[in-house]
Image (cartoon, rainbow, N blue to C red):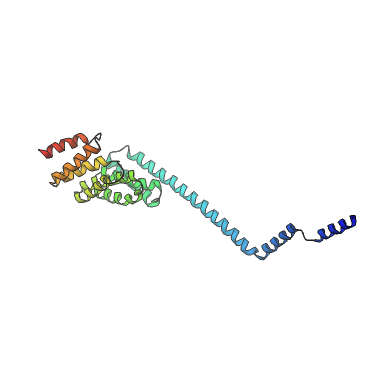
Length: 228
């Protein structure tokens, strides 16, 4: 009996071990495709390096852009609008040119447009506001802010049709932010053009939808004026 067990065990030991056999096959496969594996590993390492390098570059650019913007606005806050424009225009132009796709770069364009407007540089403000509008098209609040600013800029340049388009975009938009201001200016523009009926529509819209607005009292007086 022990001899039969011994013979069976002997045959069992003579069979190749599945794990060892698989290991040998794996080693042979690696040797056969060694160059391909090396190239694949190098490619993966290169991708990782590129990803981390890009992230570092983005963060570094954001930091530098934020510093430039902060320094420029700190300088501007201590001056009159015209003096401030002269003092910061070079720095803000550098910010917009070197870091146009950073958050600080985009916000810098908005702030410089405001600075141009306050300094009476309406043509320059108009260009900047038009350029930056696309940057914030996904943000309803910022989009409304820029469109209202564009409307006021166009009014200063006596581009009333363009101003009307900007205020209408806000008044008809989904966000309520600055909608009362847009309606008020639409009322003034309609009144200016002699369209008193349309002017009343805008002023009454303020009274019905934005009763707590700072423009409500003025709108009420305007409705009374156009009715008389």
